[in-house]
Length: 446
Ligand SMILES: Nc1ncnc2c1ncn2[C@@H]1O[C@H](COP(=O)(O)OP(=O)(O)OP(=O)(O)O)[C@@H](O)[C@H]1O
Ligand SMILES: [Mg+2]
Image (cartoon, rainbow, N blue to C red; front, side, top):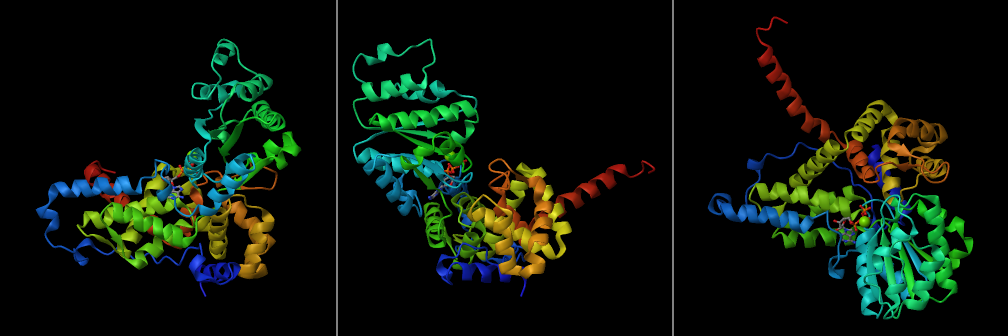
């Protein structure tokens, strides 16, 4: 059995053998993408007949699969029913503060926005803000004041020329706010100043103790949970932490079908499953891969996205990512080049990180031994694997807790471990460059 088949088999066992809920990469056979001409367009002659509609369709693909904009409409939010129900219960019903955390691109903002919408319907005022680096507590909460439902006249008591401290902000929220309000602070991970984080923890505690009508929902990356709670362990009772986990396969498939439909296209089932597998639970990756696959079908004037489009889409997405993140891509290429029999372990690191960003030695060893046995998956193999990908990892949180520095990269690592798509795409320009150079240098007498 190849390592990728073992990886699949193992994950199936881990998830109780329910193939429908697997969030694992199927083996991705990177057969060279089928030539466009080999795929018969559904309506021949369409492309030449309807030039303007091609640009239109292309734009529709960009709009439908857009990864730049968080979801704000609840119908467009895939696979988050449980998370929304828990947030409503904890924040709206139990009046706790909340922390929504997860990897980059996992869908934190989308979840927080739709939750804000639902809370709004339940009678709370939901206001959004975004933290910026180096901000203090005043900078974090002052931007909300314009929209905060404040008692008439109280605005005049807010100092315009002086930063407010924790106590002053708490007093304002408790005495001056007339309606139940949720302040959703996104990008909280940008607040790296220990003092500010400590002050935020103090504010949450004060607001709880003073039965404030204002509740805070912090949104950011995982590492901040412990840091925040360490300042006030008793906050644990008053703060609800909601991880933003990978999305189930069926839900991701549904999301992709919907995006394709909005662009006037449809996925063949094997193409859809290939993309769902490669996304490993991430809506961001599903959209990126889906968009490139859809563009491939669209360029050929077809309405159905075939397996070859999906494979081409994955290769395109990988090439695009490598252009944007060349250093990390080079680390992965080097690691895979030197991995030998540890190729499967390197892919496993990517799969585990895509499921939950924090990698520990113990987590990798347990999965490695389970999957590849003591020799290829035991402690020594884990040490070597971590050593190979170390330049792409960081140890920001607790000691021994490793994360991929670019939390979007695990899916691309698994893609790279799975096939030679990147190399085959790169091969052409390099060869052309070399030819061009030879031509230019002819006669130079080298
Ligand atoms: N549940 C979902 N259903 C459909 N699309 C989603 C879902 N969650 C996220 N997306 C899409 O994935 C992309 C990233 O989502 P979002 O911006 O919410 O993630 P994030 O975790 O806040 O990212 P960042 O860490 O960069 O702030 C967006 O294009 C968004 O539309
Ligand atoms: Mg966000």
